[in-house]
Image (tube, rainbow, N blue to C red; front, side):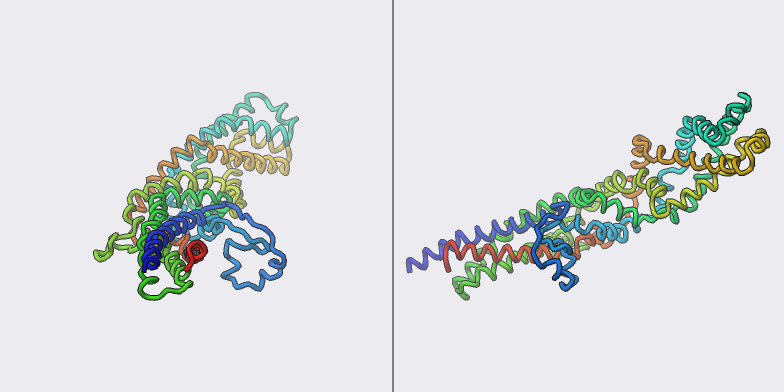
Length: 428
């Protein structure tokens, strides 16, 4: 009788302590598994490279193994950067508006005015460099008044040229930029940004999830003791109980963050914890996207160097060639005769190509970019405020939902380990 009392007392102390600690560790490491490490770390296993193609697709896509025969780990979020970025666009940015909406938000007129200012400071040197390169003798022999007339006409035409460019880009920007590819490329090249996006928005909930593992694990430990004492006492009860608790603690923790989508009176926490903070998260999300993703620099880089960059350059040259011809003004005939038609045409091509080099100078202007970023932030925050809870939860959860089961399995494995560890220390 005394032995049974001592056993019960020992179990009442140790089992809830084990389940509470393991519940905390389960959720703490589960959060780490989401984000760390940024890159894959592992070691080669003989024969795995040959076996890999034979494994089920669901196993192949795990951030646990690689086609080169390595076993290790990479954070779920960074390992899915391309897919998660795609989902973020489909469920999030695409609902906020197309790239033309972002472009209009950045005030094309102000961008055009900034372009003109940059070009005015650079255009004189560019014109002289081009003509000297194509026909140095001609440029040296041109009378100074004609040279100054050419410079003056080009400078005078800049606002008209830039206005034409603004209109052309604005009308074609949806074809020149693929937002989905742009965001996927940006997040894939900068996986830490995706981590930051989740951490900034859900820091409070992720901390709650870690602590919830302990708060839920301790009372479940007492339930497990009751089962051992009054229902069934076998060696496998603790490991099996640990698996169930580890699985459930993660499941409930994640469910509390995202569900229910709409407030339910019968639910103790009424509504998903993240959804309760929708106004606050809206501001954080808008700030992150505006400052790190949909920036003027990134849009400009995509315009000039993205998959449709050649079309952008063609559009710029198409707009600039007539302007280059017109800029020579009254001296056009004399210059054309002196150079020859072919060389004159090459001069126009060179001028239009060189002037396109101004574009990066606009998009890479940090101070100007920050001004535009604040406008994008306001636009995104305003649009997100109109999103219903169902769209909002899709935006936040869609990126990790496909891999949630990994966290549940992780919890079950750690729960089983806790059960076996208790058996090893205290016996059946």
